[in-house]
Image (tube, rainbow, N blue to C red; front, side):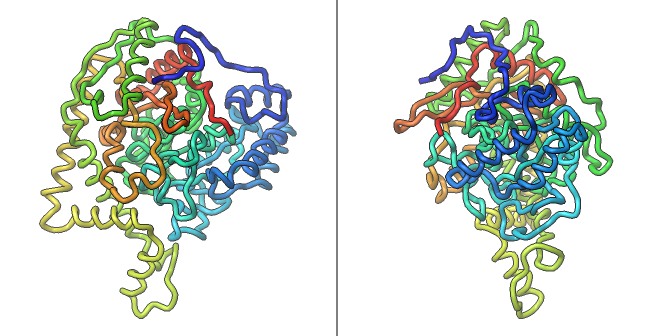
Length: 506
């Protein structure tokens, strides 16, 4: 059963007056930015409220790997003095702890990098700070972004604020929790196979994976280099548009980053798309989905039709091969990328090794968790002599077929509507002993990464499970570099439903 806070016909601009310091963390990014810019709110008060929220909630939720109270206070003082300005001036933001920062550590929630301090900032961190944002902390993730539940975090899992017995999703679980629990108005995550969109759905917030190359990956600790992409997690579509506009654009430090012009996402996000065509693929509407998930999609279809959209059927025949293809390509790239952690250059180094081989073996065995080891071994196997053509080369061919499916579908529609997940958030330990079941939960997200296309998850309703209320998300997928269109469609849905106004009771 879908439970909505507002009626389907409710039209909401959802901008609120900001002024009460005690509830500052309840407000959205744009509202806070405007209040700080107008002088109605001090950046120092905003940062203090955010840090107080972390102190009060994070022992239970564990969204943050580390926080930077002194540095955040210093930057807030610069904003209040008019020294630090920009489109995000004074707004607290959290970043996933696989993004390099010169301040604090960059751990990837792994013992391998427990004490690692980066000598440089990721490009997205530089862009956030240039825009005046205040990075208050770095968030928990599945180790090296390998996971769908944040259960693989070496220093403790994040907890879903809607029901702390359930996972927040992964691998950007900490970022989604920080936004959902009203700790920060926005956060950055990374998405290799759904790691922004899936936790956003599980936690009832907005998560956007941009087109591959839209946002620089420089300073993102690599998992699958041809799949990884950084993107925003926010409470509203408008906030996602603003954050995407800030972090997008060319970067000389990333040769794979596109130099295409960045559209005015914030200027167009509230403009409805006349005659929009929304595609529905039969491959996504499985009876194996939780009934609440399919009900959310059926409800979304009605909302879009009420907004004047036309629903068309599209075919994505290679969807069933998405998960095996992804877990060959991603693990092969992980095997290569993680070879650098050898106990010699940086990272964890074992004590008193017997010889060089023992140094390598023990350092890696001690530094990596079980899931990371599993993926390294699988990736090494599919790249090995005698198996390369049978597995990796075949997976690349199927990847092309999946991309061709999307290219053909977007000839007939502006976006594809589908679930981000087959079910709402699952309980801790539910899939721990069955990695395959965990992998299969990614079926509706991995194909977008394989094809390099953008996708956005927005709140689509609520359901009841074991006496708890849990959020359900809907997902829109678009053609390459069509984030502007996706944001406008997502905003159409958000204005008509206001599901994003629902929040967990903490």
